Length: 149
Image 1 (cartoon, rainbow, N blue to C red):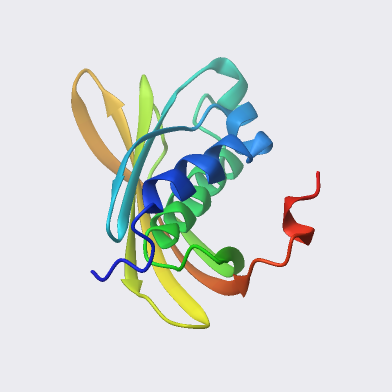
Image 2 (image 1 turned 90 degrees about the horizontal axis):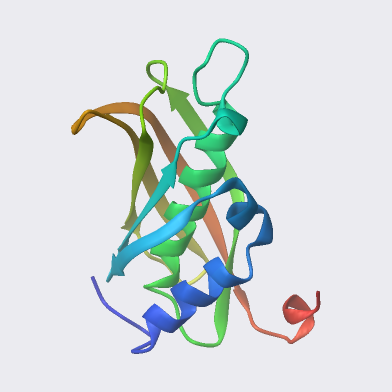
């Protein structure tokens, strides 16, 4: 995958540093490379819904941010991304010690980046695919306004 910004890893780290909600949920960056990103989350009681499975909102947050971070690896240094649409399929109950997510760019573009993410529940060293997300990311030019807190 073509890299427009040789400092893409700094951009990926910055998107995690500034994503306070994602940080509050507990999603942490593991690694990234051209067109992909990996994250993980240690499952805690606060992540579970009433039946003991990881809440769909937690999975959607993790998958959306991870797929978006993958997109940051293929855009220019003067650009940023904003999710404009996503769909998540919840494939089975998410239970285990942690979640692992891998985001992958399917199609980089000048105005839109199409990415996907797969979320795996890890229990006793075994992984099961629990959800899959597809996202359309709008490519926007940095104007200075998006850095305001």
